[in-house]
Length: 394
Ligand code: AMP
Image (cartoon, rainbow, N blue to C red; front, top):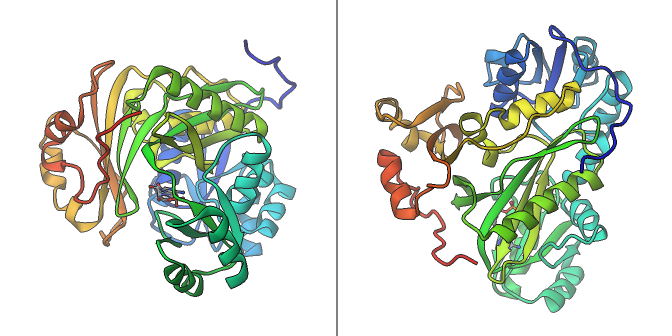
């Protein structure tokens, strides 16, 4: 049953301007979705010619902590959202005092800090990896005594794509990682022996209604997302639990906007939330090609106060990230491969580890092939070397 409709502000009319903080590919694809709905996207970015700026109606060039830039940005927009989470609390408060901000600064505050995030989830009865805060040698030793080794030591803020973390197998390695990782505090996480990693992307409108994309399965290579399989190849009841978890997190946060919930599926089928991201997510890029309304359209609709369509996929899909110069060397071949749907982010320089674009391949619903078929279907784009293969499924 749908929750009762709340009194909400009128939807933004076509021609209104949506401010997006952050100028990367997530902003680019959100701006393109906004344009399709008749809105103008205005980007706050440090880069004059970045991925989002190239397709936006306007930009304010400046830093995310630059008060004058934040004020100028807010003055030119009707509502504000994010593709980039790491804006300071002071910056967020400033923006929220000037224009409606969705998702709320409180939600960004939770997602910016792994300790706040895990505490929030656990308080709502949602399982995570076992964890303990680490400030110094004594708290690290206490955390090791409680959680055991091997474990993962992570920064609580500003980590992404596997940066700012270290797997540690011995107390000596843990002490060395403590000295190296900054800023403090850190968090020590017990290693989850997962069968696969999945994520759920959920949109929640101003009226509290939710649209949830099917859970997908994610494979990483060298700490960066390599492949997303839609849907995740997990039992139906696990998928239903994952969807319910996504909804629970969105409701607990009182979200207006879009949220990705990353989870581990352990070998008993138990779900543990790893991270939440209150913005479009790399594991949702497949929705552009496989769903009537993509995650980016859902994001814009939620922020603009429009109704949310059902998030049902019309096709199964596999999405492959194009990372750095090696993948981009294949661009001409990708363009010449029938069935590969190319997405280029407009970045000038293909540095190693940099997300340059992605490709999607669609399959009739219900016919997503196994690993071997996927490798064949991607042709020149076989899974990246080092891609963590999971042969056992829960
Ligand atoms: P994160 O930055 O937290 O998203 O971590 C990056 C990747 O490291 C995840 O996608 C997992 O593959 C792996 N990882 C992170 N935390 C854990 C954990 N507690 N147990 C096992 N693997 C993990």
